[in-house]
Image 1: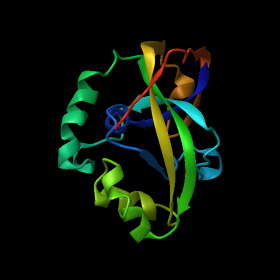
Image 2 (image 1 turned 90 degrees about the vertical axis):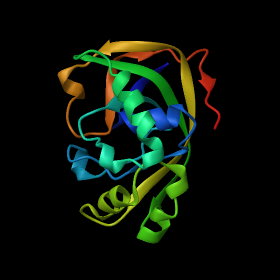
Image 3 (image 1 turned 45 degrees about the vertical axis):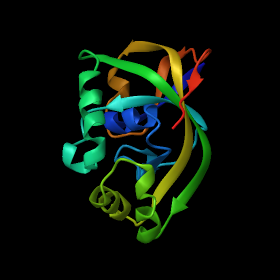
Image 4 (image 1 turned 180 degrees about the vertical axis):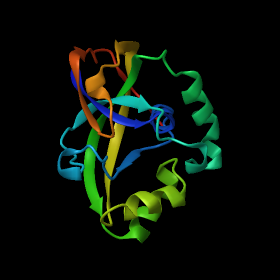
Amino acid sequence: MLKIAFKEWAVICEALAAGRQSLILRKGGIAEEGGVFRPEHSEFLLYPTYFHEHRAGVKAEFLPLFDAADAAKPPAGAVRFTHFVRVESVAHVTDLESALALDSRHAWTPDVVKQRFNYRTPGLFVLHVRVFRLARPVEVVERSEYAGCKTWVTLDAAIDTAGAEEVRP
């Protein structure tokens, strides 16, 4: 059972779900407490978001996943959970070359990585994750408390993760 959800571009959620991405790069949103992201949860549901993502920010080979994420978008006012992740390790990368060297393990273009890396203070968190497909998708009402540029959302009710299967690359 999980009540914590992690907001991420829907296309990145699709890449994780397809086994084509094994890490999450995170800077933090403007609504984070103190303006800083903290990797405070070791397991969380993937909460696909559609607001900030853009096609130009995704490598060409991932564009079909962008389209798949768009096609799977739930009706307005709903959030659909299909996967959760377990964090295997966390690193804080403080030099741009190290961040760019992770290119083969995620869907973002180098320009997006540079932009995120350089936002406010240089650096990115790198979460190495294992991804699990829920036994069945779960839709919940998207409450106003879930809105905004924040990473972590605490859901009203826990979502059952029993029977979830690990996604293999």
